[in-house]
Length: 264
Image (tube, rainbow, N blue to C red):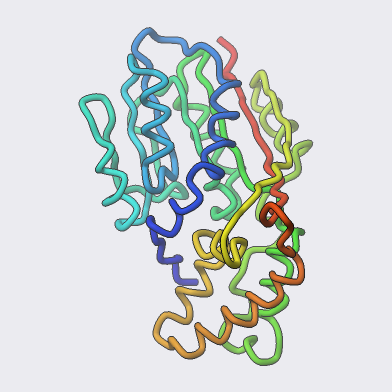
């Protein structure tokens, strides 16, 4: 399957809502072992969240990693003396130094078998170091189930069938807790459902254009007529599933968080 083509400007249209879980994740990390911590942000995307991380820990040296050249171009606008960015695929990334914190924000759902990467990352942490991540847990929400059903409908199955991620893209909180404690970590795992109040015309469609819809937009990029037809069908389904209210459109969004500290 071709990797999705990312659009940093579309992604950043909902930056405030998208970065809130990252703030909540970082708030649970706590102190890091070394006075000058080394931090890796896996799947840094447009770099705006990485910049927030670096600002919150000005003593740290931070590198954001991503495999999208377009995202990295945007991310590098945030670079500074102690913040840089590098191209890497998280599925094959091998740490070449030790870290105090390896963090990942809404990336691992794109990486099949990502729990198998935990030992490699945990081995790269100094004693007392932390692996922290959050992933969306909303694959059974209408935004995703309707998208999969439409892609697998008779009209679209030949082009899009099997393209999209399913509910097993992420583990349950219990599974993450068991895996991380099984690796000898002191682990804190939880879930939160945010109620994002979105405004504007078809705001849920606008949201997924930055994330879940990217594989479809990529697959149909060479056929604009088909792309637009699919988006219109999906838009109508979303309008029914997420009706506008008097103050905007509510998008419930469940996320799963984990903070695992390597015991000294």
